[in-house]
Structures are given as structure tokens and as C-alpha cells.
Image (tube, rainbow, N blue to C red; front, side):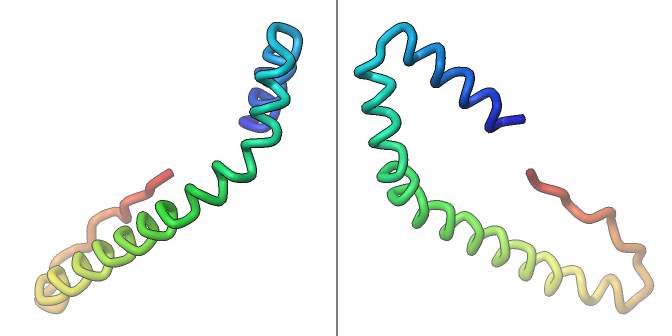
Length: 74
């Protein structure tokens, strides 16, 4: 669904201002490459916090505490 919305937005931009649409088409791979390190840092911190949560809650789980519902992130 996100891809369809992005395609429609690009088509509208192409009709309204075609040089800007072509610039966006050429620049998108470079923007994606620049965002990769930030995504990797986000994944790393998410895994680190999940690990810390598991380590800190281990004594409670060993003593019979009920586990909470898992945190679901988008």
C-alpha cells in the first residue's frame, strides 16, 4: 500500500513539476544509502534494549512472575 501511495505521489509530482520528479527519482537511491547506517543503529539499539529487558526480568520470571505481552514495534 505504501508503494502505491508513493507511486501516485510521484506521478502527481511528475505532472506538476517534472524536473523535481526526475531529481527525486535520481536522488532516491543515494538517500536510501545514506539512511542505512541509521537503520542499523536503530536495529542494534532495539536489540540491546530487548536483551537488557530480558536480563533484568530474568529473576522475576525465575520466581514465578508472569511474562508481559511482547512489545510489538512497527
